[in-house]
Image 1 (tube, rainbow, N blue to C red):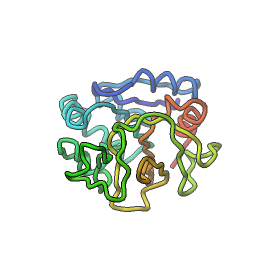
Image 2 (tube, rainbow, N blue to C red):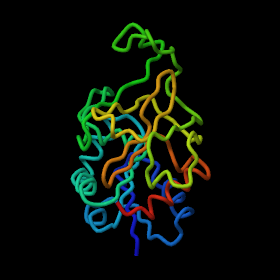
Image 3 (cartoon, rainbow, N blue to C red):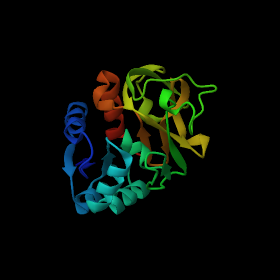
Image 4 (spheres, helix red, strand yellow):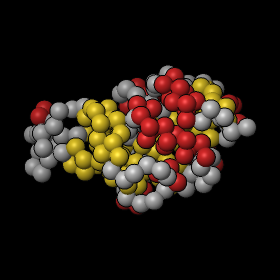
Length: 217
């Protein structure tokens, strides 16, 4: 049985992800998991997140699931979603706070009017409404099994104020544009992670979840 653990550390839309996975892969055994043992025993893991990064990192640690997520990132298919993608990197400007450091890189804030004269000079960026919210195109930078059946430049649904900036540009497999071009999908070995919400992205989002269920890295 293909068992999928959705990591429940108290900061994520776990039930929406579970419903989308069930629709995309009715043959899979989907569990919302709040203990490390169930995550360790699952065949693949979905790591969602929403809210402020300092709160997410604190609750992940307090839940006792931090090490289970890191173990999953080392040895089984793992899909990070929204803040779950951001948490895989080294450091976030939101706080600032240290993250899981699975991937080297940082999480940056979009430039908005209140930031134009501070740490994020406007210069080459538009002054943006933050958060970035709504449908946006995703350009696929290279082939990956999770893009199978999803046309390049398809629309996905975003809700976020921060985005990842990997140290290694080869990690980036998808980009979108909001004032600046930004990484919205990363992949390496057994990990795929996205800034957008597949569970809110209609047929293309469901296809991405189905592809994850079938993926054997």
